[in-house]
Amino acid sequence: MTDTPPLLSLQVLEKRFGPNYRWMLLLSVMLGTMASIMSSTIINVAIPDMGQHFDMSPTRAQWVSSGFMVAMTVSMLTTPWLLSRYGYRRTYATSMWLLLIGGIGGGLSNDYNWVLVARVAEGLAAGVVQPIPAILILRAFDADEQGRAGSFFSTGVVLAPAVGPSIGGLLVDWFGWRSIFFMVVPLALASIWMARRYVPTTAPGGLAPNREGARLDVWGMLIATVSTLCLLNGLVSLRDAGLDAVHAWGLLVVAALGLAVFVFWQHHLLHKPHVSGLAPLMNLSVFRHRAFSMGSLVAFIYGAGLFGSTYLLPLYMQQGMGWSASYTGTVLLPAGLLLAVTIALTGRLADRHPTYLLVSSGLALLAFSFVLMATLHVESSMWWLSAWVILGRIGLGLILPSLNSGSLRGLARPLIPQGSSVINFMRMLGGAVGVSVCAIVLQWRLAAHGVSLSSNDQTALRLTAFNESFLFLAVLMALALLAAWQLKVPEDKQNE
Image (cartoon, rainbow, N blue to C red):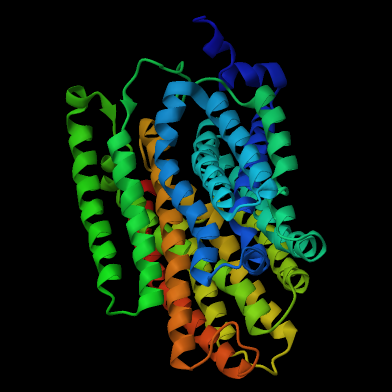
């Protein structure tokens, strides 16, 4: 029994499969991450159709997306503990099975509550999976190959949401919203098969999984879950009840108190692990590194802008412009494909140029694209809309391969799993907040102009409300740009 983990370590598997093994390993985890990201973003195309089927209010419909993101955000914090206790392969494969079951269960559900349960299951799986590739890239690839590996991984991952809305739009028009859930099935099955062959059974660092190690911090999970739910519910309540709603602000205060308690509890576990026997969900020592701290702040704001725009764009095209789901997906397709190409090119630059320069350039382009989106009106050509979306996706292509690797590179190797988990958590928490905040801003601006999404008239005023929401996203990206520029000093010191 003691010989099994070393036989299935990264080094042993590389000897078995040859020098190209690390790329097959990357492909294995890339397929699963593609499935998890597709399940998180493609649902937006189906929300209008699903809302009609279940006769849901906009608030309830949003929880199809928000419920997934809450589960994904919180479960990311468990990845380091799961890897140390069960190893790469078992953690990854089990998550893929959960994602597969959630996809099939959601597609077959006839009750909206079961759809939400399926979405939460998918979110839990997606959250565990997403920090793993960054850990493996830093473990399996040399420093001069990490940028290229990151670009290869990011290119494949981006193809899922790039092609997904186009295929998803067609599926919704042809077969209804249920077909969206089944899109993850082939990718999940392929990833499970490849994981059994290429993913090592060891824990990070080449160690054997330790079933007798520290126990999972269930209290920390509970605090993080309650705080996140209160945060998102509070934001949704603000949108529905107005800025003076006592209930909404009460939830937000509970969320803030929960954050303070969570930080205190994690600090306690970090310094006194022998007392409780629990492993902290978040190792706060990673924030002692300036590059990581600034990268986490960028990831939070960037996540808010990325997922907020992913929420707004389909609504803008379908309920603002009156386009069908399939037409919306077709318009978004060129931008998604160009994003994949940009990432492939950026990966080579990431090995030779500082992180702050690539990330700052990408954020500037993304902010500028949102400003240009705000100039569109009823008579604007579809080509202008497509052009501004493409510009934003080029900006995303400059950010994605650089941010994670640049933020994690200065961490000590034992902290890399924690760092990857935390920075993904920050990005997804920002995304969950961004979707709700963008919905609030949109609702606010619609009310200010005296229109609603469901009305068939006053299209110009409805588009004005959307345009003002895009300007809000531009301001968010400008804030992230300020934080990204702070990555400059630590990286220069690191390279000396």
